Length: 106
Image (cartoon, rainbow, N blue to C red; front, side, top):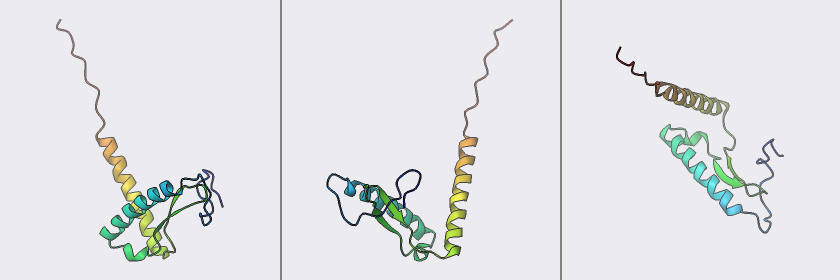
């Protein structure tokens, strides 16, 4: 299976020469670790026991969440939405206002 970006392909089981599998897996491992750290802080680590780094046949890193309960998936979606809302609010409140031009003395 391949998505429109071409990154979700069959996982690499048989390695081909010249494909940078280690680089892709390292990237996936770092991302999976970052997600795992946040899940631990939220007390959700046990809800994602299948979280693992992987790599596809093209050498692209993948993070597999594994099988999760619907409630855990819904909570993760809400947390992502809340984070995006907070991030959006932060970027709109820190917009630099244009400086007013000083009027010349008459």
